[in-house]
Length: 136
Image (cartoon, rainbow, N blue to C red; front, side, top):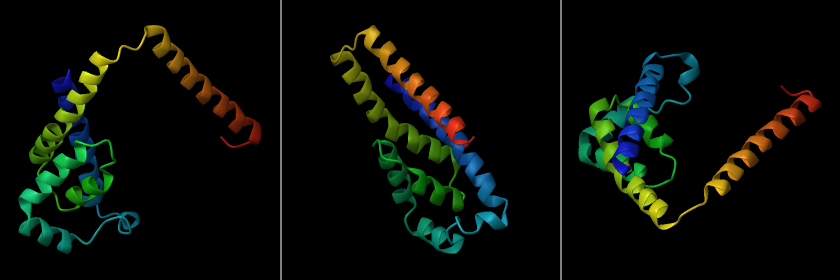
C-alpha cells in the first residue's frame, strides 16, 4: 500500500510540477510577482544540487505543505524525473507509517461512513448559507 501511495503521490506531484513549470515559463505579467529571481535560484541550485533533491524528499516525508519548494524547483526548471524520484522517496516512509497505523488502529466502517456523511452535510450547509447571503 505504501508503494502505491508513494507512486500515486509522485505522479500527481510531477504533473502539478509540470503545470507549474509551464505557467512560470510562459512569462505572463501577472506571474512576475509570484516568481522568484531566476538568477539567484539557478545559482543556488548550481552550488547545492543534492541539497535540492534532499529538500524535496524531506518536504514530502512530512505532512507539511511543500508548495514553496515546488515553486522554487519549478522556477529553476528542476528536472521532472528527479523531482518525481525525490517525491517518491520522501513519500514512501510517510505512506508506510500511515499504512502501519491503519493496520494497528481498526476504525469501524460505520464510523468512516458517518465521517463522510458529516463532511458532505457540512459542505451542503455551507453552499446553502452562501446562496442565502447572495455569495455564489
